[in-house]
Image (cartoon, rainbow, N blue to C red):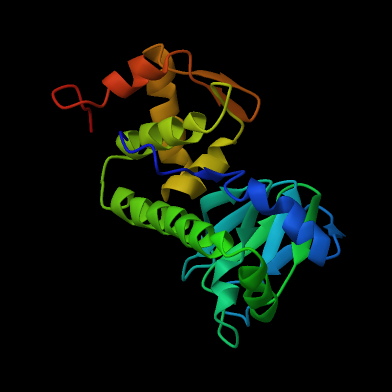
Length: 222
């Protein structure tokens, strides 16, 4: 959790290129619930996200979904659409109403010629996404639901100005690959220990330091 380059909420990494994309592409608007890519189906194309929130999921064999990342304004999502003619590796869905700029790889070639720095910054942004995916894979090797959940809380609130995690227990379970019953049990324990407060479809972290300290070596519970 000490690596500040890992972000669960991707936001504003490409803000400096917002005007460039707006100059070349026309905004499109989609309501909450709109699907952009679906795991296992032909990929559509990339989008520059102007406003709103897009969730990224993987889908298990049983059909269950697991939240693995969040896109907010001034980011590009559907990165697996860069390799056209292939199936999408993840599912992307609008969590809120969104405004986006669709583009193609050929469009991107033209933008690189106009703004060469975009090539470098897009590579760095792609590395941010890759680091999040690698982090997620590492987290799944941790057997303790408590540790996975606390690590998720810490990663989520790092990118917010508020200690609130606005996700239901069902969403939290999907994010850490656990059952809702397991998450409910851990949340109950954390609440008794004074490490979290719960509200309607949200968790509040009163002290980031205290909850982080609870999973340091020597204090970890299974």
